[in-house]
Length: 341
Image (cartoon, rainbow, N blue to C red; front, top):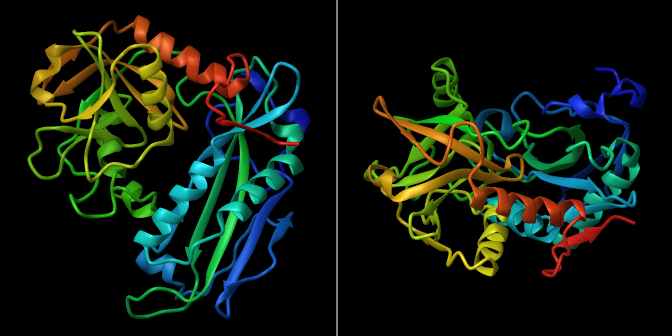
């Protein structure tokens, strides 16, 4: 694949796609220690045909963004939280931890090296950053690898869903993850298992799928790539509490913002049969930021939230506050923003 040329980019129509940028970061773990990694212009990776990751899925990853501010500076959003979650995922997959300070530094190196590709302020775009780690030891039996590759690539992206436009979703008949499985880890298998559910949702005209808890198929868990929230008729903010959902950094941030906005947020069971109790709903995550849910269809029954054409007032306020902090338009009183200098 040819390297992306800066002059060929249309900043206002980036979409959410991979583009091969000039620099990535790569480091190997072997002989019981991490080697001296660094920037590379090689975006290809080479593994043995029996590599652990290729057959048994020993892989973890992160998703994060760098934003261009009004004054032209570049900043990250809570990268230390990504580093912690990355290692929590690694623990669940019995993989080698990557030092958190090195993780953040490596991310900064990739962003600085590809700084020209951070979309301009006001375009709605950002530089999406994907750190990941794979087990590379050639193994025939199922056991943890003793060698790993840690790699980071970046790509300029537009909004995951263009505009703050409510989208239709459907409740899936499939489980995203087992109750005591890998749902809390950001690992490839969880997403591979969601491909069929996502395809069926899109084939039926929906933006995506929403999963229920794997034990009772009664309580809302999360979307295929984002956490769920709802605003109750009582004006409070609700989001699911579950053993099988990814601990979202965006959700943690929104919970704090919702508290400061007087929404009395709580993590609790949300019964899919009680949707009439909620006036607004949405998806929240690194890719989606905040995306309003216009309707949710369950077993053929469609429930419309605030509107199918415009976001609700609470969703709009949450989005304006969170994205405002990320892009530098709203004061960061929480210390979440990390400059890339």
